[in-house]
Amino acid sequence: MAESKLENEQLEVLNILKNFDSDPSELIHCLQTIQNKCGYVSEFAVKQISQKLNVPESDVFSVVTFYSQFTLKPKAKYNIEICMGTACYVLGADKSLKKFENKLGIKLGEQTLDNKFSLKQSRCLGCCGLAPVVSINGKIYGKVTEDKVDEILDELV
Ligand code: FES
Image 1 (spheres, rainbow, N blue to C red):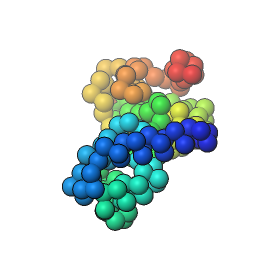
Image 2: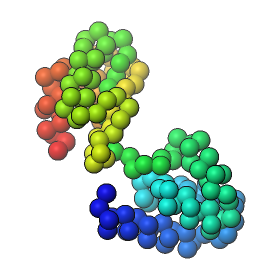
Image 3: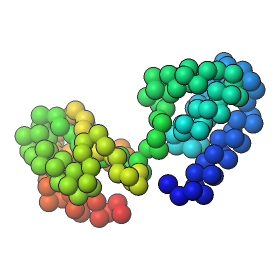
């Protein structure tokens, strides 16, 4: 991450914290605000929240890791979810997955270093008639055969 971007994020965290009192009961609200504005709760943010709200760092960290709404790393710009439900699997979802992995240079469950793409699998996305199905940031792509992966990625970059 570029240094100036990091500094901007840290300034954003400090600005957000100015609006909070030193009240431990504000922890969730504070974390939600930082997650929404910054896209994640950084290690820097955890330390600053701990000091501002008088909550031990370990407690702040526990809350961040317990609730799925919070992330310690920036979320990817494009979250690619490959359906591995039965209908999609039998029509070759595993081959599309391999192609996504090769093209992006990451494995299932990972995120590219530039935080542009993440790769996950899911169970039935509820549109088996379009199998094999891929969801990207909630948008459904149907009939995603191996050959269609290039086309989809080209559309995103
Ligand atoms: S099994 Fe993939 S959408 Fe249903």
